[in-house]
Image (tube, rainbow, N blue to C red; front, side, top):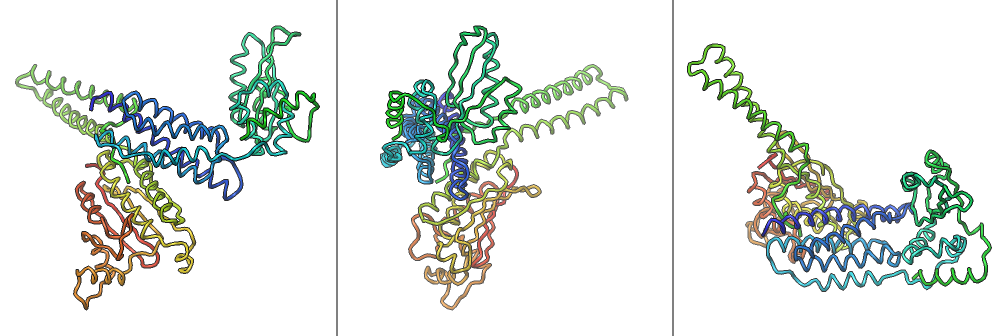
Length: 535
């Protein structure tokens, strides 16, 4: 693979990871709205996801990744419908977006490995179906329509169709709407207007701006801004007061303004029309900041100077005096320290945050939860922990395997949890901590735990125990790592507690680590991966 293509892959991989993070944030906002009834998914967040996917499409097309570009194109079409307000934001939509992002990630990995792509027809059909899932409204709700009728006619006529749809969505959400008027000296209006926009955006959303020259004052330019904000109006006024004299006129159904029948019909027609598995890292690249490189260069120069000084001194005096010998000893110590410092800085360049690895494991667990119909809350602790890149890449698959197992066979169904006196929603926590010279990753669930009775029955069924044997908890925990061992007669198509754990153990041992497990039957299980700080 040539260098240019490799760099494109790294850039796209980073965009995909950022998209995953944005979708996690969108899911949190959607969940918060459903539970508390407060807040709405941020339109700016949707716009950001759209821009990232659009960039993925362009970059993929530039380096010949046809399938990646096709996935991004269909994904972009769906997001465009969401931005226009024709497709509602709900959990099903976020799930579809996450599936599309996972497909982008998988396609990138396959492209990097030179493996032929599988068919993406099912995903494309799902994205197209989601894009067609519009609100189904033939018009605009009555109260929303009453507010829209009070938008000044010339402002409404100046809006593009996407702006009109956006305005309809904002009003339907119940966000207060204002026409903001202000005036600036024509000599420096651009800078002043920019400052005003920055202040307003802190509290709400600018929908459109309409400039006009004042016939009575040719040296000034007037602006009317269509603006939506649910923030306290007095706080907004205080923030913009330092920029300019600004007047806020609220647009509301109760303050209905008169308009000619022709204007009303025109606006009504316009409104009615407007409404309607973990993947390996792609490369050995590590991104770092310039400050680290500057410090590395400075340390190298310091080492070079000390080494040159020692050589010059030794060459200039074949038989060094006591004074010269003392100086050489000092330089020797300085050079040793400099080499150690340089080594530490080079090692630190290899360190990467474990956050993306933990996030990938969580997404894999969430996908299994959806597939099995289980209600599970996922928690991540220690995402800012730094680990050698090779270790972080090597541990991704074992960690994902443990999370999938915890979801599929650790967490009980809602009915089983209620019968056991537990909360209906299970918990899977993924932790990363640094303890001394080791880094530890834990997958903790509050599920059914590992039952020695079930392990004993499975061992008897598989013929790995004599007929009169019974296992205690310690022997049970050791046995589940036996190749091919499973406690279920018909293994799940997703995972099985014990199936593949020997692979997990082998993969961890190959990088100098070890796997430990503890379990409390009926209360949960903890798998712990212990790793060296660096490979």
